[in-house]
Length: 111
Image (tube, rainbow, N blue to C red; front, side, top):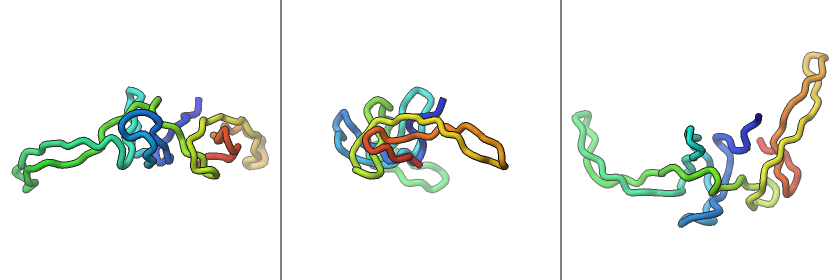
């Protein structure tokens, strides 16, 4: 089955303290969690290392649950659900079925 959210997709947070923020998906973790740029920022206390890294407080992105984000429609720039359409394509003269993700609001294909 095709994934509804992939790395590099533009998503919008629909629940939580960062509601309304948009960002690109950096990483998808195994337990249905995502790391999104600029969302769910936490302060992390870092100890100095022998390799020369200084100690201090660093801001980092924490994982957010997949159910709390929606993909942004490329046409309307608003959150939308994702559908999957099965298409027939010609490749090397042979018909081939391909699954394509589409935005439910506008019907546009998602990259």
